[in-house]
Length: 80
Length: 425
Image (cartoon, rainbow over all chains, first blue to last red; front, side, top):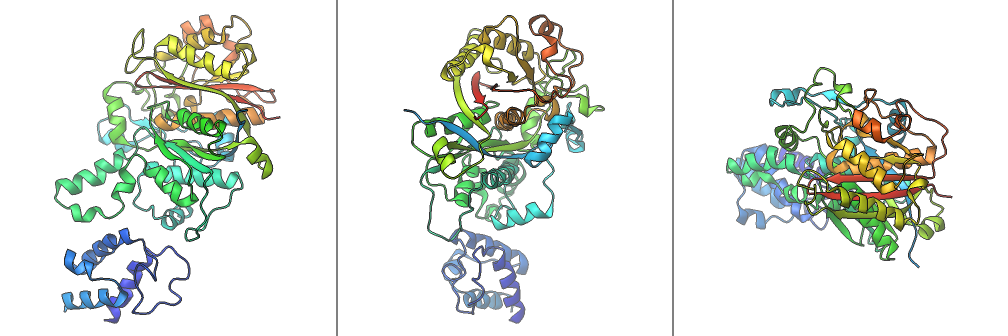
């Protein structure tokens, strides 16, 4: 689980352009409103995760992803 | 009364320099930026040479990361690098991406000929053809659409006036500067980023190679390949880069104590209707002459006032006709002005040429020099009969007082653009 979190943070950092968004980061942080990631970039994050873990994330699963811990849970369920 | 238009910032990415100072030094030294390109040989090009800016360095990588441009096409990358230079040069402040302020009086006209052609070939087609649409990602459209560069610049600089993309083949860059100038003259904006870019693009250049328009006899002597005005000219040399200018209303510039490079006092663009000598690839001479004359009238000057012509002059059979057109348009039989071709140094940057060459003209005007037009030691015999060979500089001319420069660009589709620049006093 910790490994997933570290990898996810590294991927998200590619798409966070605003300064200081990581200061108040916690597992409930929203990808769009807290980390201020452009909503269009969610598909790029999905592509990165799919490649990293050799998984497929469906459109239905994608729609339910709003905060950091949602993504961690989803990946964990797919690889374990 | 219509507004006066001045240039207050310059930025360039080119095969002879990626900043204004090194670009100017290369011009003065008459350095060629043309090199042998192995990839073109591998693709079986007849012309295996070109001018390609080197943008592989960690400083640029940081910029691409900051503005989410890592996967962007070269057209966008060159444009952003040149636009940031011009913006900084004009001492304008870079807006915070997350602040609410926008610049309602600032706009952009950014052009290209090839645009994202290379990205279509190298990413879009292979992924779609292999049914991997999911892997295209979220940025493919912003990188492929013709207004991609303008959209990116609007985002970086919070531009909220008109932001538009133009394309008119090899006249694109001059046209973008004219379009921006018109907006400012009409009091519809106070500042525009204007310019154009064309990428290193084997997929675009292949078409020119197939048309036998590119120089193919100099693959082993690349620095001698681009030969405008020369008897042994063998075609143009494809090249890549971007030129960006800050085009500003005079009082707006004065009020913020901006450095003023030059004033745009006249301009015109038209087309030749592809009749009477004009075609898809050739200019209708009468309309070229009309274009230059109209720009002179617009500037309220006559041919004898022009000190230097920065020609379109590509190194093809059309050079003679262009020189003849200038002579008729300027209505001069003696005391001809100097004429030179920047393409002798860096080749033909296609859609970027008008912008990069206008920057070169401005640097000559401001710094009182005329760069050598290299590789024409064997002047074309016909050109010799109509122009004073002493006014085609083979060597750098220093300390010459230049007041007016005429810059023109012509392009496929029989399109013409002419800009008259005046030293700002």
